[in-house]
Length: 258
Image 1 (cartoon, rainbow, N blue to C red):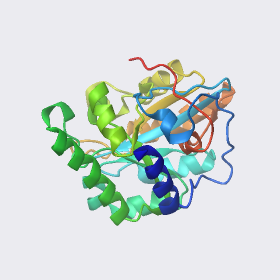
Image 2: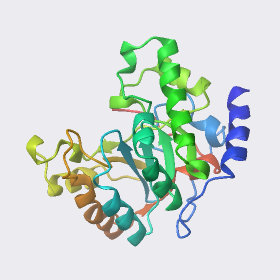
Image 3: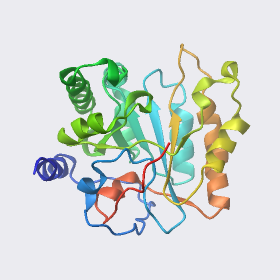
Image 4: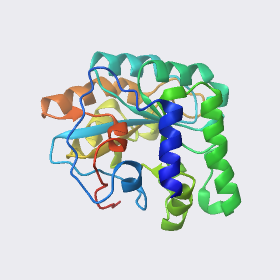
């Protein structure tokens, strides 16, 4: 019941999912559930599809050093994305929230302060999720706001997922991370980031990248790798889809695995 109520409230608030004009809706494998409810009870690292489609996502908790290039490349390739922002990031960068929304991409919840959820009490975890939601709304997320949550450090447990679901959010994790956030000082290169993305490519894959870089670095390998990644996906016959189509299509998550 709570999920159904939240789905209605979210649809009224957001006015329905807003995707870039050239993003087509995929045919996603039908299941017993529909929309948001079908995503509950799972960490959703992939989604079922018989088509060569993939989702691209970005996390943001540090700075916005890669924003211009990332938004520019997504626009050039007509590729929708979902950006999972912390509430703290939204408070510090409300203009980024507005730019992402204006570009037609989705905005997801990545907690307020990016803590390890296992170190928190249930009430503290609830506050982390709700505070981030409030910050995104206050920053101007508007119709771009989704009922999607991504755990900090991708640290999930069935119990914590249930808590998030009870708050009206589906957990959306990822199939692979490019690891571009590590930077050259962490041994990463653009080529390695691209290789990680391509090696994980499969129907229903969810790619995680990062909008900025830690420690006030301005080098954002994911921003540099994005055009090559999108080109490689296209060359292999894959199309980038908007995760918000899972809310309006009969779909279900694929079995989760790490």
